[in-house]
Image (cartoon, rainbow, N blue to C red; front, side, top):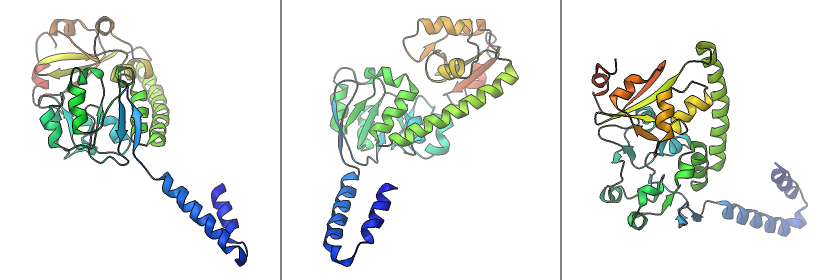
Length: 276
């Protein structure tokens, strides 16, 4: 607004100041040009100096697609495991081809990415980072950021030069989460428990209590945490931990959220006598 007023004032000066006005216009044009997106160098969690393209258009960010969708960006390929994809994102990712969760080099090359964003350091152990970085600039968020979805969204916003959009999304989320918690409390009385399980290749996994949906359920929405979840989370080495049918049967829970990653197997698995 201040700049607009200043430009209007310059435009109303007498004709004899035309040269000065021209110089001002040139300066303004130069400023506009310098504000255009440009290649930037950012340091990732592993200390790599990564040259980020000015306008990356073919991004691979496996299992980070939530952040891309939030920022209005479509990846060139989306995460998959076995026959499963992130169904809840398909409204925005419908038609986007899949890539295996472990990002095989040949598959990555086939998509010709111009930017690769990796969540955990473990994904690029050994010589893997060198291999990926030969394909495209590769930025590693690192576990500390990757395991905190807020930090991950803000960091990816920074990488893609969409920091304002990322912050607005967080602000909107906080408002919505508060509204949902208030509604839940009227239904559950603040005492009902919940857990989220994931089925992959016939095996059950349960989300830890301090990451992703676990953090949302227990810390933000105030749902009670089952003892089995507490026990498994205390010894967890990742976001999801394997849980046996016997342990699943022990879990005293009011609401069980089931994430099915295998086509057609979820309903059958839940019919097991140990579960029902």
